[in-house]
Length: 250
Image 1 (cartoon, helix red, strand yellow):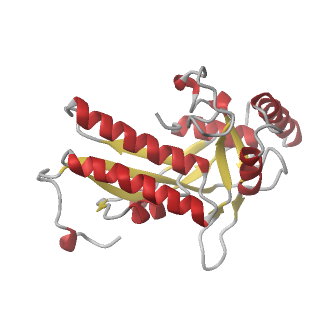
Image 2 (tube, one colour):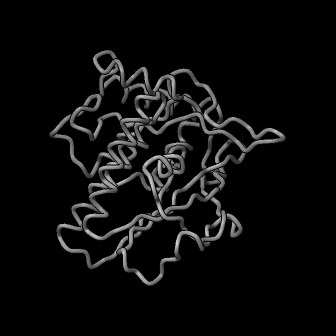
Image 3 (tube, helix red, strand yellow):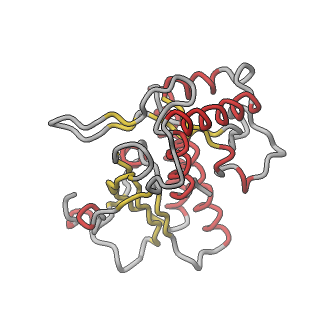
């Protein structure tokens, strides 16, 4: 599983686009030359990774990417709470989340008449072609910073192929959800994802991706950029593929 668009909308809306610890704004406005920059992370209170912070093997996998297990933090405080899990326990983070969302509601005067938080798509931004993933680095370059993902894969996979697809998707979710802030984290992520991509290739599957710029609207804050990754896994002999040299730019 991965975090759904609806869950993301509610999390960002209730958090007021602010870090639950320092109250810093998590979307920096666009400049004359560049687009907006997202400097916040959707953080798991209970990590799904066995070696992750606050991991609890008894915690239900169905709740792992649910709203109650997610907290909005700036990247500095995301790293802090994950580096110090004994200080920032699960109960501490749940209380922090509840206090912050209550503060946002009171401070910003949110009411039932507020425009609902929603993601708006522009026809011109929706990818018409996906590009073949040739390296784990190219995949990470597109995936990091995305807030949503559209996954697509054949519905008649063998059990072995389905295991490889599930492992790859979960691996990508784990790395992008945790945030990659340090060089050693990126190297570890690339190595791990390269293994997953190799496993897909061994069962005759390839990965194609593209990134879509959307807009997060509604609530009490101005619209901001919201990026989604389109990811499709296909068989190596899928007739819909275009040779790499013939793929359009963009």
